[in-house]
Length: 314
Image 1 (cartoon, rainbow, N blue to C red):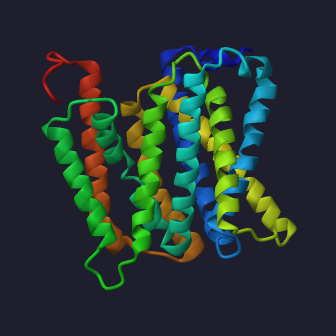
Image 2 (image 1 turned 90 degrees about the vertical axis):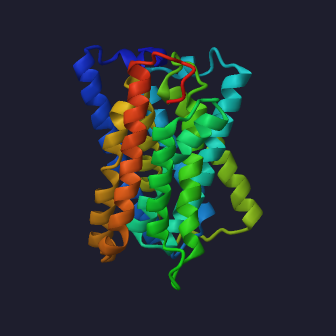
């Protein structure tokens, strides 16, 4: 099977939608669980080192899929400078997102840090206006405002216990948004596995540079830690493939609502593993972020279905 044929495995429209939604949900579970592991390991190892191992072992799922599909020859064909540059941007965005997210979940409540990362749709809209020159109308500006209010409620900057760590999940969301914007410039006939192979390699190289520039490295203490570090990479690698596949098979407006299931799952995992229950702190802000996200999703769907006047901002 050619690597360029991966999106043709499921041909029936209903099956494609089901597989894409399932891929999204499974990717969310993988990300939440590897976030739990990162929080556990964060007391022993610095975030740049965790990002290094995450990206190194994330290559294992990629190599596995390449072997299964016998697609190694296609990996090095039809490679343009533009494609390499876009994968470079995506890879560097990934590693910066990882480090900001890791520092945040290590130093904050797990659910709080994870919830703030769901502000990424707001950044996607803003970046679409700046980079893609999309016109932003009333509804999406209103969504940005509501989402921003939700973020402020969660961060609670007027509280005396406010921490600057609260800014880090927002930076993680920003770089996740950048990686999604970059994906829009990559031709659709290039497979998700191929994109992630090059992107993760650049993430790996970027994590090496950051690791050596910070001079932060601790020897892995035991075999259990090695196992957990490998698991972080495998879960993260599969999650990247699942997200890329899902968003390239059906429209983001169809999938995005399911991404918000990561919020209740982070609450549950935070309660189970870290005895956290910040529901009162998070609840109003979560509502604001989710409402903002759904307004953006709804408007994007309207844009994709019908656009009577392309000059009119939507």
